Image 1 (tube, rainbow, N blue to C red):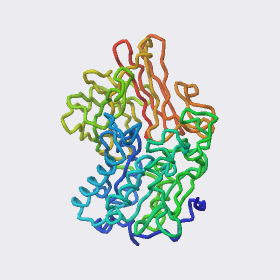
Image 2 (tube, rainbow, N blue to C red):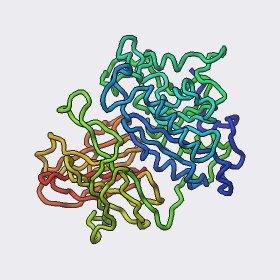
Image 3 (cartoon, helix red, strand yellow):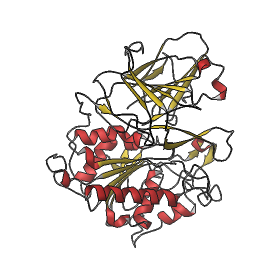
Image 4 (cartoon, helix red, strand yellow):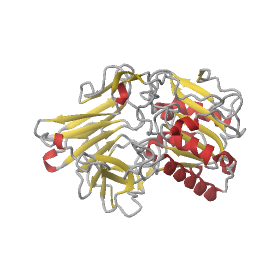
Length: 458
């Protein structure tokens, strides 16, 4: 495997531009296409896009794409409703890159991917013509040597290191045995030991005590520049400030001006409302994620009191979602927390509470939820979620309703949401905090088919 390098040893990386921090000539900066991971959406890149904008990269050259069905098939060779094969994933990325190049007039793009998204990037560059259209590829937390590499175990799945998909991608590309090929310049970003999908033990694949034959350096690739960021989790390899710093230096050859997101006086927000599908194999078994618009859903937005979660007057925005799924645009107020309320047939009334938005974004995607059968006896059901990272009880300072987070293990970063089922009557404030970001919502009644989500931004 490749030599480990510190985050700051980035000298010698392929340089694309000498003045990428300038905003004077947007044509000098290549479009960047961000590719999300398994089960995720374009919204996960929200803070990364903000950091690029805050350092002068033009917003119209930052593209985060939504794979309609973001989950991988159980068996890559067999059709599975609501899921995508490696071939379908690659074809979608290729089409999106072509759209971006046509819209911008650029001859090449930069690709940045997290987790499963990196498989599509590697497949496109190796097998889909991306070697000509991509200048730089950033792979963050991508399980390049598999989540497991156990001979005979689920080898038809694309995450199997001994399966045909990854075996082909990792085959030597030259006499030196490199796993990547030029002229594309490659960067991988990984954790030292805190990535749930690069673990020598099978705990996170439901096989505790079984060797995965994948080590902490599983995301690294021979021939790429390989960066290690201590203690970050699987998603933070792509969405943390340190990951942005490494990416900016790799693309531009310069340090970013700041890792802090620059605020705007009046952020304008927009995004899609999406829903859930039924399980592709057993409709009675539950939900699976998709990124399809939830046409006909009703969306209301309320400004809230940051201490109590109570609404400050009537709705400040309302919209019936159309075929494009968009719920905005909505001119928000700086420093004001908001409650987003989704109502749609077949779903619970979903109350999503967010902390104030420092900048505008078109990536504020909202998902309608259903009340799980096991929760219907509760008085209120509240979920605390962190889309851009996991909860680490050792590393992070956090609380949920004044207590430790239910369901979060004492060690390891492998859980990104925590749920409380309250058995008390009445509506009250409920707060959650994570490393200084605090969100307060209200305990809406489950008996009236309401669910509550406290969603972190960072």
